[in-house]
Length: 161
Image (cartoon, rainbow, N blue to C red; front, side, top):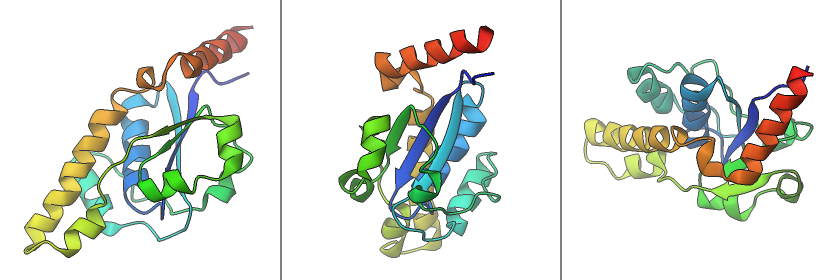
Protein backbone atom coordinates (compact mmCIF):
# COMPACT_ATOMS: atom_id res chain seq x y z
CA UNK A 1 0.00 0.00 0.00
CA UNK A 2 1.39 3.39 -0.99
CA UNK A 3 1.68 6.12 1.62
CA UNK A 4 -0.36 9.24 1.03
CA UNK A 5 2.03 11.24 3.19
CA UNK A 6 4.41 13.67 1.53
CA UNK A 7 8.06 12.83 2.12
CA UNK A 8 9.80 16.05 3.13
CA UNK A 9 13.51 16.52 3.79
CA UNK A 10 14.68 19.44 5.91
CA UNK A 11 18.29 20.04 4.93
CA UNK A 12 20.84 22.12 6.84
CA UNK A 13 24.61 22.27 7.06
CA UNK A 14 25.21 20.11 10.14
CA UNK A 15 21.78 18.62 10.94
CA UNK A 16 22.19 19.70 14.54
CA UNK A 17 19.64 22.43 15.18
CA UNK A 18 17.34 24.05 12.58
CA UNK A 19 16.66 20.98 10.46
CA UNK A 20 16.14 18.91 13.61
CA UNK A 21 13.64 21.45 14.94
CA UNK A 22 11.81 21.43 11.60
CA UNK A 23 11.60 17.63 11.56
CA UNK A 24 10.34 17.66 15.15
CA UNK A 25 7.66 20.26 14.42
CA UNK A 26 6.60 18.45 11.24
CA UNK A 27 6.17 15.19 13.15
CA UNK A 28 4.26 16.91 15.96
CA UNK A 29 2.05 19.23 13.90
CA UNK A 30 1.70 17.54 10.50
CA UNK A 31 2.45 13.87 11.09
CA UNK A 32 -0.88 12.93 9.56
CA UNK A 33 0.09 14.36 6.14
CA UNK A 34 3.90 14.55 6.20
CA UNK A 35 6.66 11.99 6.57
CA UNK A 36 9.48 14.31 7.64
CA UNK A 37 13.22 13.67 7.60
CA UNK A 38 16.21 15.85 8.38
CA UNK A 39 19.82 15.63 7.32
CA UNK A 40 22.92 17.70 6.76
CA UNK A 41 25.66 18.31 4.27
CA UNK A 42 27.92 17.54 7.27
CA UNK A 43 27.26 15.93 10.67
CA UNK A 44 27.65 18.14 13.74
CA UNK A 45 25.73 16.10 16.32
CA UNK A 46 22.40 16.94 17.93
CA UNK A 47 22.47 20.39 19.56
CA UNK A 48 21.48 20.03 23.26
CA UNK A 49 20.05 23.54 23.44
CA UNK A 50 17.80 22.81 20.46
CA UNK A 51 16.59 19.70 22.30
CA UNK A 52 15.95 21.84 25.40
CA UNK A 53 13.91 24.58 23.70
CA UNK A 54 11.88 22.06 21.70
CA UNK A 55 11.08 20.22 24.96
CA UNK A 56 9.93 23.53 26.43
CA UNK A 57 7.41 23.67 23.56
CA UNK A 58 6.31 20.07 24.17
CA UNK A 59 8.21 18.42 21.31
CA UNK A 60 10.77 15.73 22.15
CA UNK A 61 13.62 15.51 19.64
CA UNK A 62 16.06 13.89 22.06
CA UNK A 63 15.85 10.61 20.14
CA UNK A 64 16.90 12.24 16.85
CA UNK A 65 20.42 11.82 15.54
CA UNK A 66 22.49 13.98 13.24
CA UNK A 67 22.91 12.33 9.84
CA UNK A 68 24.43 12.98 6.44
CA UNK A 69 22.08 13.53 3.52
CA UNK A 70 23.83 10.68 1.71
CA UNK A 71 22.26 8.27 4.23
CA UNK A 72 18.88 9.13 2.70
CA UNK A 73 19.91 8.75 -0.93
CA UNK A 74 17.40 5.94 -1.53
CA UNK A 75 14.42 7.94 -0.22
CA UNK A 76 12.33 9.58 -2.93
CA UNK A 77 11.39 12.98 -1.48
CA UNK A 78 8.44 15.01 -2.68
CA UNK A 79 10.15 18.16 -1.41
CA UNK A 80 13.51 19.23 -0.04
CA UNK A 81 13.48 22.33 2.12
CA UNK A 82 16.84 23.92 2.83
CA UNK A 83 16.79 25.85 6.09
CA UNK A 84 20.20 27.51 5.81
CA UNK A 85 22.03 29.29 3.02
CA UNK A 86 25.02 26.95 2.96
CA UNK A 87 22.84 23.87 2.48
CA UNK A 88 20.87 25.67 -0.24
CA UNK A 89 24.07 26.59 -2.10
CA UNK A 90 25.55 23.11 -1.81
CA UNK A 91 22.42 20.96 -2.08
CA UNK A 92 23.43 17.66 -3.70
CA UNK A 93 22.42 17.56 -7.37
CA UNK A 94 20.67 14.20 -7.01
CA UNK A 95 18.13 15.82 -4.66
CA UNK A 96 17.25 18.52 -7.21
CA UNK A 97 16.28 15.97 -9.84
CA UNK A 98 13.86 13.97 -7.69
CA UNK A 99 12.18 16.66 -5.63
CA UNK A 100 10.74 20.12 -5.44
CA UNK A 101 13.48 22.25 -3.90
CA UNK A 102 12.53 25.18 -1.69
CA UNK A 103 14.72 27.43 0.41
CA UNK A 104 13.37 28.89 3.64
CA UNK A 105 16.30 30.35 5.55
CA UNK A 106 16.34 30.71 9.30
CA UNK A 107 18.95 32.37 11.51
CA UNK A 108 21.57 30.07 13.07
CA UNK A 109 20.89 29.94 16.84
CA UNK A 110 24.32 28.53 17.84
CA UNK A 111 26.04 31.32 15.91
CA UNK A 112 23.82 33.98 17.47
CA UNK A 113 24.26 32.46 20.94
CA UNK A 114 28.04 32.97 20.72
CA UNK A 115 27.54 36.74 20.81
CA UNK A 116 24.86 36.70 23.53
CA UNK A 117 25.75 38.54 26.73
CA UNK A 118 23.78 36.15 28.99
CA UNK A 119 22.61 32.54 28.89
CA UNK A 120 19.01 33.80 28.81
CA UNK A 121 19.76 35.96 25.76
CA UNK A 122 21.31 32.92 24.06
CA UNK A 123 18.20 30.85 24.81
CA UNK A 124 16.11 33.66 23.37
CA UNK A 125 17.76 33.18 19.98
CA UNK A 126 16.95 29.46 20.02
CA UNK A 127 13.36 30.12 21.10
CA UNK A 128 12.78 32.75 18.41
CA UNK A 129 14.06 30.48 15.63
CA UNK A 130 12.12 27.53 17.08
CA UNK A 131 8.93 29.59 16.89
CA UNK A 132 9.70 30.83 13.36
CA UNK A 133 10.23 27.25 12.21
CA UNK A 134 6.96 26.21 13.85
CA UNK A 135 5.10 29.00 12.01
CA UNK A 136 6.60 27.82 8.70
CA UNK A 137 5.80 24.14 9.32
CA UNK A 138 2.20 25.08 10.06
CA UNK A 139 1.93 26.29 6.43
CA UNK A 140 2.85 22.84 5.08
CA UNK A 141 2.08 21.16 2.79
CA UNK A 142 0.00 23.89 1.09
CA UNK A 143 2.90 26.36 0.87
CA UNK A 144 4.91 23.90 -1.22
CA UNK A 145 2.79 24.47 -4.29
CA UNK A 146 0.46 22.63 -6.61
CA UNK A 147 2.99 20.18 -8.08
CA UNK A 148 3.81 18.75 -4.64
CA UNK A 149 0.15 18.63 -3.63
CA UNK A 150 -0.79 16.84 -6.84
CA UNK A 151 1.89 14.25 -6.08
CA UNK A 152 0.27 13.75 -2.68
CA UNK A 153 -3.17 13.42 -4.22
CA UNK A 154 -1.86 10.85 -6.69
CA UNK A 155 -0.27 8.84 -3.89
CA UNK A 156 -3.51 8.99 -1.95
CA UNK A 157 -5.47 7.65 -4.90
CA UNK A 158 -2.99 4.81 -5.29
CA UNK A 159 -3.37 3.86 -1.66
CA UNK A 160 -7.13 3.40 -2.06
CA UNK A 161 -6.85 0.85 -4.86
